[in-house]
Length: 312
Image 1 (tube, one colour):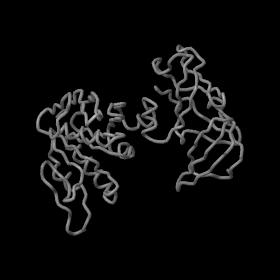
Image 2: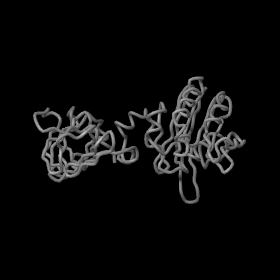
Image 3: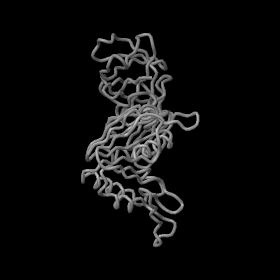
Image 4: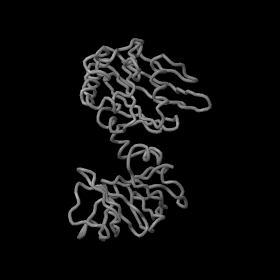
């Protein structure tokens, strides 16, 4: 079983919600569609299912037609032209779990927002059922508005922003190595640092100077196309949990910066710490805070292999 999506474009009014979206899928894959506009993911699934026409491009399933489980209606959940009614045992509640079970033999299963907040009590069961369907050899594609769903249940994620496919990769790869500034902003918290390159594009480890604070930072090895011209600003990115905080000796190769603590926000199992590094504002995420107070001075480390250079 395979699926090829070829340059699908879709316009609603004056808005292009899909522009030349192409990807392929094979038997057993689970693919998440993560978009900044629900219309984009909704239309993509319907076009693949054959229930909506595209303005350009096509979807080419290898054998049997795809099965679509669409968004909840007043009556229940639309499943391939039928409506699965709400359960009378629990008035007002419904889960796509029943529809996914009924579609376990589908060669290609398309699911619209199976992890929506209204289904949170059965989230793990829905995820297990999706995994089971894929393990039987089906292709499963689901849309989501929460990137955590892709991290937990998908083999690949399609990040669609402003109608264009910005990145198609493993969810963890997108999390650690977003392809552009737009993707970094869309998939979770990042420290986005404006900087200018100091070293030649031939250097194995590029060095930059930050615009705010004028700190010199080394970043991970990066392809030349992302480095840009040496006199042009670029954006560096590092996740809050990848920044270390210390008060004593540390590793100088970790881009050590002096900082002062400006805010501490407990968040249950983790704590968000805001830091001022001579004008460069950073956010760190730590498991717990011991002996750290607002106004304290400390050292923060930004490991070069955790700093990505993003395309603008």
